[in-house]
Length: 286
Image: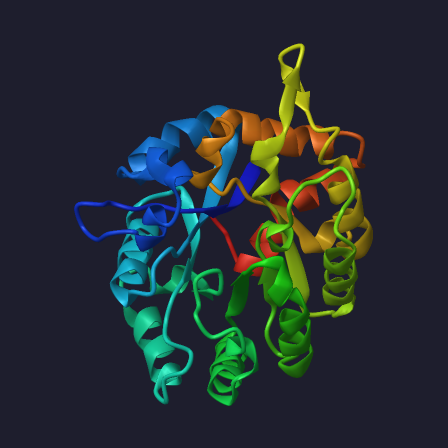
């Protein structure tokens, strides 16, 4: 089965810094360049035929470069970029991105709420105006946030029903033997909204190994909840490479997703591992 990786990053530290890499000593192994030429052989070996490149910095130039990569190659099928949603000219900025080389691959926008200093950013009127502009343009909005902001995401998604809100990494939940009750409540409320989708990403690097095979027992209850809340047609696999390399190799992350979905029907596995991402991000290649 061909797999679509709905979430990975690329960066070249000789072109621009990645400030988040300096936020914690544990991120030190990531303080180097990770290019598409590094990812491509890993993806091919793991059966991944198309990917979604996702922004890391609030710099429009990064989005330009990701779109150019999508235009020039055959692996990146969609880009989730960045533009200032609070700007009065956000509609024109979106149109300008689409007019650039590779602009047809722009599928969504993301704002890094993990580092956004304003905890009320999602409730601001200028942000809501920008989100509405995304919906008009047919673009989705990726949510990368701490679990504490998940209730605010529920409110925003309900207020802007014309936008598909994509929750990255199950809302960055901490994988513990007993899931946090507040996260479960907010996660369930988010899933009830018809314009929401979730990425099975982030937590996959925490899978262990047993007898050389992925041991996903610690992740099973989180996956089962996500599947129960969203259904396979609103759940999609993402590697979160290269951040995932802190805990696992690319093949191990794909293997964890394959193991978690192994007992599902062929149609459900196809949805989570490929077709949901193709639909949400309008991916035609691969």
